[in-house]
Length: 166
Image (cartoon, rainbow, N blue to C red; front, top):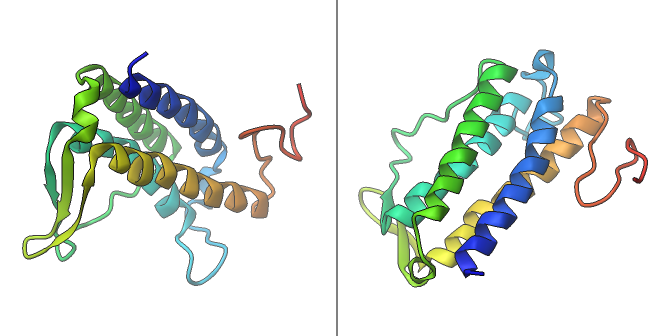
């Protein structure tokens, strides 16, 4: 098995688990946030839905120029839009993996602004840190949001307090 295929398989597994959490976020709670310093739930969920879209520029490009001064984050208007965006981004990411061989993983990738380079690292590290680990991190936050909203938390790596072991 190619190394890039192991990334794709791990991503597919984590995306399926992540979708279960996004499906459970009540649309009526999109404006809710657990603390004044926290994102509203729609902002967090929308960010999670966008993370899979980072696979394409990470593998297809050698750099991404990001302008924080003009960036406007996408925020889902409702559950259907949130899930549709997430599903489309997951599908695009999985298709991108199939276009590449392992050699792409050793290539360097940079995140830049119009005036500076924020970071440069191997594409394998971008996939691990900025896609997979980032997705898992924010999914963990979403599980806390769900718990605080009294929404049953699905199984993630094993049974949750809301789902009996199989």
